[in-house]
Amino acid sequence: MDSASGGPSDPNSVGGEAPPATGSTTTASASSPPAPPSRYESQKRRDWNTFLQYLKNHKPPLTLARCSGAHVIEFLKYLDQFGKTKVHNSGCPFFGHPNPPAPCACPLKQAWGSLDALIGRLRAAYEENGGRPESNPFGARAVRIYLREVREGQAKARGIPYEKKKRKRPSTVTIAGNVSVGPSSTAQEGGDAGAGAGGSDGGQSGQTTTSAAAVTTTTAAV
Image (cartoon, rainbow, N blue to C red; front, side, top):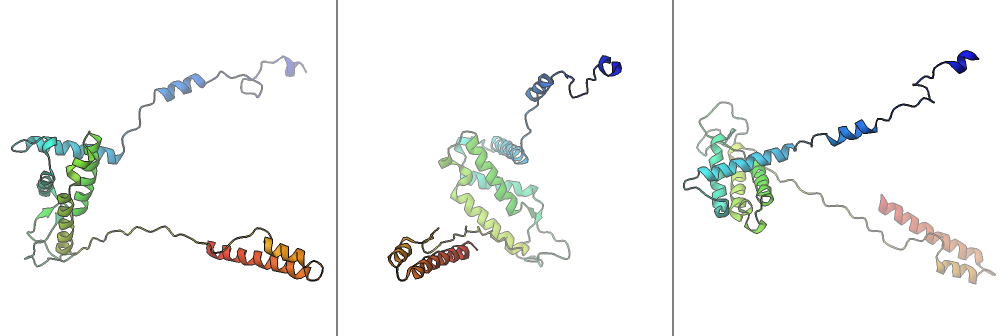
């Protein structure tokens, strides 16, 4: 009895009081660093800085306000020198061959998919940096036409068709007829009217209507 009542209390026991840890938790959450930018945002920032540097080095130098779709196409052609995709010329024996058996002297260019993604990032960066959507040079019609020509030309030269992904249309289910939770009013009136002579027939009519509606609903849902 004495050992049970007179000993020191265990701080880990249920009845023991532990010091609150809310202060340390709040401090840690408040001082946590901001989340790093996503891969897309980092790439978009690098692409934007590269384009601004291109305008600065352009002869004569160009400002962003004077940039047009023609300058964007010129920038895309400039990037071809850094490409890694083999695009066969029309006179190459491997023209249209998806897997050429031997090397050739055809140039390396930027793949159409890389250019298309680049234009999408630069188009978004232009508007995020104060540009107006109606004057966005990356969304110009000439740029879209150039990208389409690059896609078709590379598809023929490499023998790899670029098929545009088809968007799936949402399927709609139309339920014909009225769905009754209970016996219809018409059937119920028929049952009430014929309660003396044919009341059971009226009740069966109401049940038949409800069952047909239920079957229609189930079929449409499936």
